Image (cartoon, rainbow, N blue to C red; front, side, top):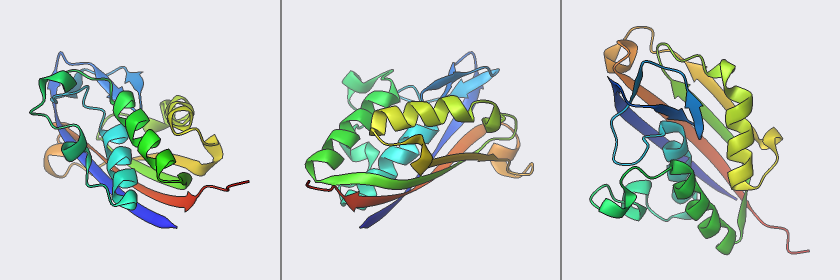
Length: 160
């Protein structure tokens, strides 16, 4: 068994699309990022890479590489999933928290969970996505940022 923790934060500005867990979200602001800025998928990538002892998303997909400009973060998670598969692991449990002052994650939870389970090739039952606010504190609490945390438990694949 391996455990990994992931975290991401992005500043929010007007006129940029918001994507969360690979799902388009109706919102007045979106993340400033080199890729599509999907904080949830970025946190999940970091959690899985951490559990595998493979560094982090910035090492694998650096924002200094122009080929990743505007990339759908689902592609990052697909690549991380391939690495996890080659290393002989599968997700046993994934628990995620999105912190946003005004995005109601529960409205998108089913779509997000379905999307993530599809990329990771696991049952939706092993994925939990929840939302919290920052209670008006800091940049996230002012609505100027969005954050995500992810904790993953990986287990060795059954060889049968």
